[in-house]
Amino acid sequence: MIICGSVIADVDAFSVVIVDRPIITTTPRRTENVFKHRFSIAHEIGHLLLHADTCEHSAAIEKEADEFAAAFLTPAASMDAALPQRLDLAALDRLGRTWGVSPHSLVRRMVERGRTTESSARRAYQRLAMVNDSSADPSSAYPGEVPTLLKKAAELAGDHGASMPVLAEA
Image (cartoon, rainbow, N blue to C red; front, top):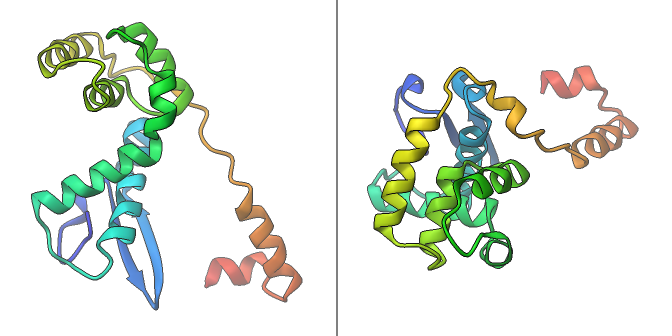
């Protein structure tokens, strides 16, 4: 969601463009669920790429950003090869831990890729809701990304006189 006067407590992440630089900010709830956090960030990348010129908020714009996030995190060609032929929640849980997405989102992807029906997906969502352990540490489910370009960018900046404290202050 692009923030244009919204309250931060109502969102998981937001994006803005400041001095021609796209910024994505996550809110304190970011650690509650690593899969949701990754989706929120991908959703905001979608807004920055697709809706940079508007502060309009509509269901269609949010749906488009959600579709971008799903395609970004689980590309169709890769999912066609990876998704099980039949709805198998244990297999989707394992696949989700590999791809860093929730089994719920993979059920949705199975519908989109024609591997299951909406009615089967609804039943799967109900089963997922019954087995969801809200006390489990969600960060253990996915090891996360290891940024490689960030370190290189910091080294390059240092080579040009911008030390870590200077970068942090900026």
